[in-house]
Each structure stands twice: as structure tokens, then as C-alpha cells.
Length: 127
Image (cartoon, rainbow, N blue to C red):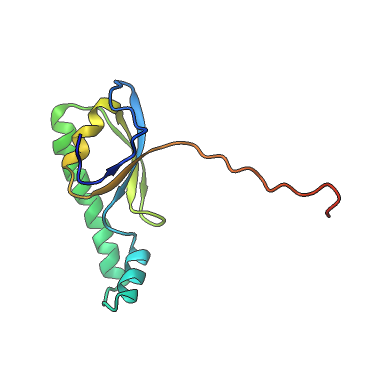
């Protein structure tokens, strides 16, 4: 697999088991895109940026139909992200993740892992 985007090497591409991944799209979330455009001295309204985000999701859905649906690959979109990042979390067989390499909207693919944050340690005598 040699996609034109980053794929986390810890993902198992040989398994038939359903694998949970997070896909980040190339199009930035609307607020981020507006701030980046502003910093670069370019004009971009929040409405235009929001439209670009919506278009990236629509394009991805079209690509999924071709890359996975037409091949009868089982998949489930678990969550749609549009604020902190622009993308989706989804499940599909690990061996079929490579089919996504033909997508034009994907920037990165990560494994969807639970992360646990340890609470801060307060010294015993501190109130």
C-alpha cells in the first residue's frame, strides 16, 4: 500500500476482523480554515469554509460507494467530525483499508484507540 496520505503503521492490514479507524480529511475544519486563511492574508468566510467541509464529506461518501460499496466491503461510519478535525471514524475489515488509498479527500488514517488520561497527582499535605 502506497497511498498519497499518512497511514499509521500500527494498523493491521492483514486481518479480516473489523478495524476501527479515524480518517482525517485534507479540508480543515471551518474555523481552522478561516484562521489559517486570515494568517496567510487571504479572504475566506466561515460560510465558505463550512461549505468546503460539507463538500468534503459528500465527496467521501461518493468515494466510499465506489471504493467499498461496489466491492461489497462491509463498513460502518461511527462518527462524523467537523469541529476539532474534519473527518470520520469508521469500521471496516483491516485488509480492506488499503482500498481507501484511492480517495482524494483523505489526509491521514489513524487507529481508533481509547486514551485514558491520568488525573493530576496532588501531594498529600496540599489542600
